[in-house]
Length: 119
Image (cartoon, rainbow, N blue to C red; front, side, top):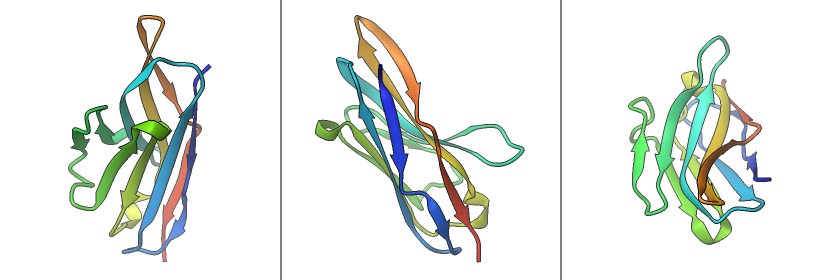
């Protein structure tokens, strides 16, 4: 069974920074795309950023220039550096991983970490 564990959420003032981490553990052959999503109260879950195994990235327009996704393949970990945070970034942030196992691709999600941007 594959597990994703997020860390790094918390309360921060507008304009501040946070760094989220998500470590993948368990039995799998390799990890393909990893990503971060978020869900604010009363809203649907939305894409924040993704990164392929080769390092290609994709960002939501709302976070471009402020957030940076990265990964450490040897540690099976994905990061999200969030700068210039705004109140509208407040949400539960989830990490996601697509991985190969037994010639099939699976998707797993973390449990989520709360990010609150408020003065």
